[in-house]
Length: 610
Image 1 (cartoon, rainbow, N blue to C red):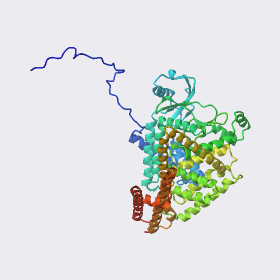
Image 2 (image 1 turned 135 degrees about the vertical axis):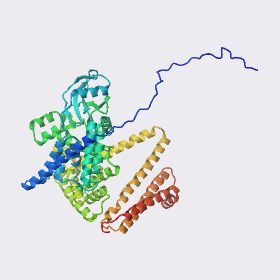
Image 3 (image 1 turned 180 degrees about the horizontal axis):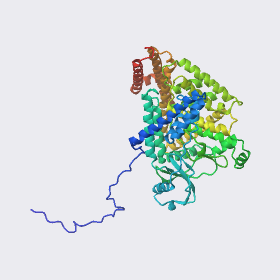
Image 4 (image 1 turned 120 degrees about the vertical axis):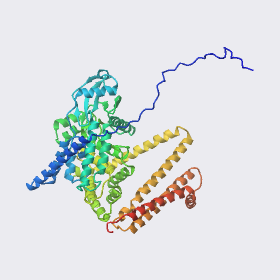
């Protein structure tokens, strides 16, 4: 029996919603395209390597001539090296700036001379800048700006900066990346790598001697070429300075509507450059000082504010400026500091920043020997040297630095952390102890900020200033904690309880990390005894201390939780209970495995005496 055809009133068209937009084209996710360096032409790289070799050949011949004519001196050598890097320009200047704080690698005279290098270059045609600005803003120049000054405010091998006025009437500074900067710096980095590796292969330098420099320069140049990354740091600095209520400290606001990896637009900040304040104080220019006073700018307060920014960046913020520039810090009427540009942003390892803060805190508490011991932890792992002699050399220099910091009659640079930085780096260099790049960057930031601060506030006692900073930092930490508590309590009591438990677990994790960082480096005090048996014994001691720290931390957390809920706690049964817990036993077993692996590596080492 055949089915009857469907009725016409059943099979009929139904109404449909018209689409808001035409979606026939494929919708793709946004491409995550971090800035990468192009592959440079081999011929250009070789030409640049030859330029490097010729420049340093001239340095060698010049030094030889100085010896023949009796003009040889460390300062003369420093000037010749600095002149060679300046003649090469571009990336070579950046290399010199990076090397300026490596007193563990270079003589102090060369390092200090390299600190004065400046990256300056003729501006490129303004038409090319306008083309990039219009591409970033998506509109013609006259639609973006009411006025645009074609004469750059500054020009370097990386970019040029222009003054302009937005259609809204806001004055701004427009930074534009130089055309073909990526390709040029790709050649520079490849040439630097080839040149330094050649020096190592020829045994002029030991193998991998400059490997850290090569890695750092590549990361630094890649970051500086990406203006989106610079804008992100600038905005975060501004936001977090406001969050932590840093008094009269901020950064220029970024205009994200005109932003690309080649263009960065931020507010034009009126005032005087920090370099002008430094010059007025250093020259005792009465007219300039009177002008500053009329603007309610007190140099002493500017110096204190610089230290606050430095220490806040190093010890509280998640990143810091390793190369502050007095030309990119504007002092506004009233003494407010506004950062209109940043140098090199770094994120230090948590252990390094905590260690450096402890060094200064112990000095402020007059615990010089304790400060020296913490510095040893910061430099660990030490090579197989006479660590007893090294620690004595270090402590002697730290004592000298401490006494200078307490002497109001001492020169300003001796009363700053510059003397402490020199003590650490010079002792490390003389005893062949390598300094990690993150610690060297933090010390460089300290040195530069101190240099600026002591020039505008020469009559100071730094340790007293740091003790006052610690009190302010504690208040900021308390405010951050209260803010988090309020945020957690918004979801009710149960959410607050869970948040408290999470914070407690994080505290235990941090405690375990602290115990590990302290015990992991215990062998450094025994490295002067190069026997492997001594190392094994110290590792066993470190393992016991790790276990003890873990159990005590867990017992404190669980016991506090039970007491808060009215449950009586007996210490020893609680410890036994924790030791019987499978998870705790697993953690203890893992720490023992890690210790045995370290012992295995040490037993496979060949000691110098063998």
